[in-house]
Image 1 (cartoon, rainbow, N blue to C red):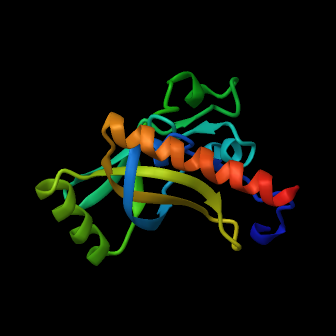
Image 2 (tube, rainbow, N blue to C red; image 1 turned 135 degrees about the horizontal axis):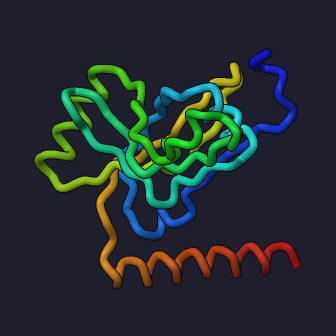
Length: 155
């Protein structure tokens, strides 16, 4: 049953907020095969190098790695673990994303993958611009300062 899962697993892109200034966040469904869902539930996936792009008024996620759950399966021998996966978004969202990607130099980066209350795999994906080295240093200083403040408050 979909809502019957005891652990709600989330796969995060730890480098996303460091490497990119995220401006808009969308939540989208992902079209997956059965074995991919099983691997995703087991946490055998990575979105560190993943990105999304627009093709023919559809949004596709590239370089999203999902480990094959059954090595004996004939299909898994054809390495489809990083195949492009279609994201499910509304037409208005797609047109907004399309104009930003094409005209203003934005990137579309997955932030996290999770299962909603109904047990459906969703991806939180951000429309973002890449940070320059100086911006990355400032972001790191800010995050270190936040950690230090939390430690001081705990004492």
